[in-house]
Structure formats: structure tokens, C-alpha cells
Length: 248
Ligand code: BJW
Ligand code: ZN
Image (cartoon, rainbow, N blue to C red; front, side, top):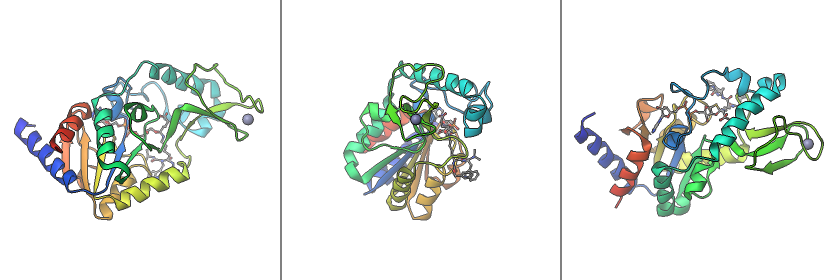
């Protein structure tokens, strides 16, 4: 893309945002890529070497909980070393500008938006920093290293990470809040997601359907590009700070 096109796209996106009273944002793995967190579906991504059905479904966990815990314990350990990047900070700046009129929903489980200072983050797919019991109501927040097969201190059954696997429901209140924000916003900003996993990807369509303008920020075209009114193609860690700068 020519420099001038990129600049025109940024101007157009900034103009849409300046006119927006309410903003909703959906992020995916791409927003954390520049922090060193691997994405899922890009080459060298997290699924490489793993069958999704083995590590990210309840059936996979019942079959081989040790394999699934190994996968998540490695990712938990890697998280200790990563920091938010300028894309996360730009979204936190936007959060301060719009206050309660901005909702930030993320598919990421890495906690980097919160670390960058975003408040009220809607974690659609859960969090790597939480565990829960498969049998009783026990839940805990923990960033410490865990044993290979951690057990519930209350009932001795297995613990699992508090994330949403394929075939599982998203946390109801969180999804509902994200849907309300999508339907009420003037601009829906979709960042660093391939937009193929539902119901999260559906939020962009719901927003569009309800009359919002859609801005996409991604390295390239995605399933959601067709409904975007402005496309920012490049790394979110560069483009989002540029966008915020243009808001004035
Ligand atoms: C950059 C960048 C840079 C790189 N700057 N950009 C409707 C139609 C079809 C199927 C379904 C449907 N409704 C439900 C389904 C089934 C299923 C589904 O969606 N399947 C599709 C794959 C077809 N959905 C579910 O099962 C969901 N549950 C559900 O619907 O419950 C009700 C129900 C139950 C039973 C039957 C039917 C309905 C649950 C989905 C849970 C997803 N969980 C995961 C794992 C979470 C835990 C973990 O992390 O291990 O969530 S899967 C994985 O994908 C993870 C992610 O959050 C999610 C999305 O991925 P994301 O973030 O988009 O990453 P990538 O890698 O795909 O894309 C990265 C993007 O970044 C790329 O575009 C790059 O270009 C870009 N990028 N660097 C900007 N620097
Ligand atoms: Zn228990």
C-alpha cells in the first residue's frame, strides 16, 4: 500500500471516531503479536503442532488432561515475560477519552489490555490467570506456576484453566455486555482477529446491522473486511497509536 493511501485510511478512521459518541472494540490475538504472544492461525501460530480438538475442546481435556495442561502451562509461563505493546496502550488511551462510552471486548486470555490500563475489559474467552474446578464451584486467580496436573483444594478433582474451548458457551453476562455495546455503538473497531470464531466475530456484524461504522485494523484482509468502512492494514502496534494521535 502507498504511504498516502495509508494516511488517507487513518484520516478517514480518525474522522469516524471523532464523530462517535459510543465506541466498541473487539480484539484478537493479533493485538498481542507485537508483545511476542503467538497468534493461532498465522504460520508459526499456536495451533501448529497441535490439533485444535486435542488442546482446545472439553473432549480433548477429558481424554488427556496432562497434554492440555502442558499446553496451557507453557503459555502461562511465557506470559510472565510479556508486556503490553503500543497497540494495547493506544486502546487504553481511547478508554480514558470515551470513559464508560467505550467498551473493549477481547478474545485474548493474556490480560495485556488490563496491564496497559484498560478498565472493564470484557474477556469473552476467559483468562489464563484463572483456574476453576471441573466438579465444584471452586475458582481462583493465580499467576504462579502450577503442577502438571493441578487438583482442586476443595474436592481433589481436576482443575482446568478458566478459558472457553470450542463447543463451550461464552460467559453469559460478558457476551451480553459485549452484544449490547456492539448494538449501541457508533463505531465498532475490530483489531487483530481473523474474525472466524463465533460468537465473538458476530459482534462486528451485529454492530454493522445496528448502523455502526466498522473500522478494521489488521495486517491484512480478514473475514470481516467486507463490512469495514475503513481498513487499516498494518501492525496494530503502529497503526493504533497513529490513529489516536489523529484524534487530537
Ligand atoms: C495482526 C498482527 C499485528 C497478526 N497487528 N493484526 C457459527 C458458525 C460456525 C461455527 C460456529 C458458529 N457458532 C459457533 C460455532 C462453533 C465455534 C466456531 O466459531 N467455530 C469456527 C472456527 C467455525 N465456536 C464455539 O465453539 C464457541 N462456543 C459456542 O459457540 O458455544 C455455543 C455452541 C456450542 C456448541 C455448538 C454450537 C454452539 C467457543 C469458541 C471458543 C474459542 N476458543 C479459542 C481458544 C481459547 C483458549 C485459548 O486461547 O487456548 O479462542 S479458539 C482461538 O480462536 C482463541 C481465540 O480467541 C480465537 C480467535 O482467534 P483470533 O484472535 O482471531 O486469532 P487468529 O490467529 O485467528 O487471527 C490473528 C489475526 O491477527 C490475523 O487476522 C492476523 O492477520 C492478525 N495479526 N499480527 C494486527 N501485529
Ligand atoms: Zn473442586
